[in-house]
Amino acid sequence: MKIKRLKTIIIKFNSTFNTKLKTKIMKKVITTFAALALIASVTSCRETTDKTKEAVETVEEKAVKATEAVKVATDSMVESVKVATDSVVEVLEAQKLTEEN
Image (cartoon, rainbow, N blue to C red; front, side, top):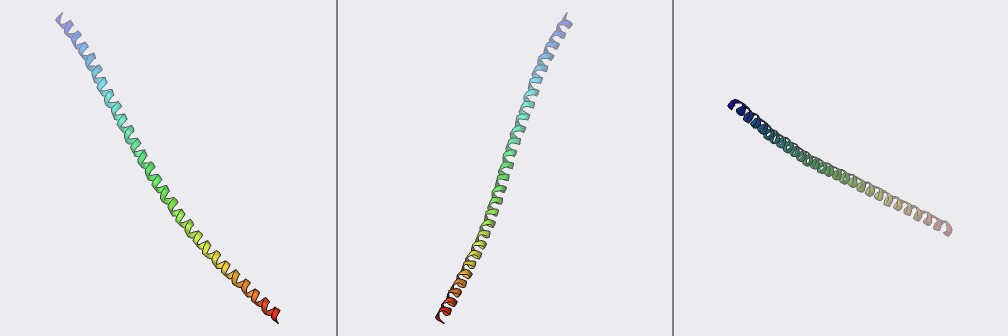
């Protein structure tokens, strides 16, 4: 009788112990996955921030290049207008001299 009762107590203890052990293990597993998910999301945010910084730098570089190109084009246009104006003045002076003669 004592052995049977002892077996019953041991079986109950094992089932209770196993249940508690399983619960603790599951809590650790869930906590580990939650921590990994948090780390992954933080890493993802950092990557996004880094990519955004790179994009801003690229846009800034392209804007500087575009500004330089506009400056070169503007300088060229100003020079062309000066040359055209000088040519018109020369033509008008030549026409005036022709009319005087």
